[in-house]
Image (tube, rainbow, N blue to C red; front, top):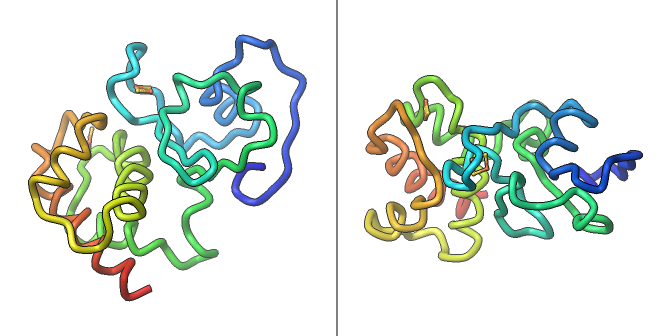
Length: 151
Ligand code: FES
Ligand code: FES
């Protein structure tokens, strides 16, 4: 199930989840930024947990519930974490942003809404940004965490 819809595909068993999302389902918001499982541009939620979709076989996700960046907003209303990145200039080129936001939502789900800077920086270890210097990303995650508490 991807973003609430049941999907299926006839695929090579070696197909990675990120390939299936991008090439079969045309959900191109999930990015590929490396071939070493380091950058985090490919992070999606699998059964509610952030995972790097470049390190999972699509077949291993049979029966799982997956949310990509395209499934985070509620119709025209952005998710509070998306709003926070926009309002706090948490992006420049935007390449890392889908993975950052999916990771950030997972951080809030695991660590709560009151996050200190050290925790945010530690938790973002698996997400690399080549543009921003991270300062505004950290601000965005903090603001997004608080906004998620307000609903
Ligand atoms: Fe998955 Fe870089 S593309 S970690
Ligand atoms: Fe460009 Fe992060 S905004 S890589």
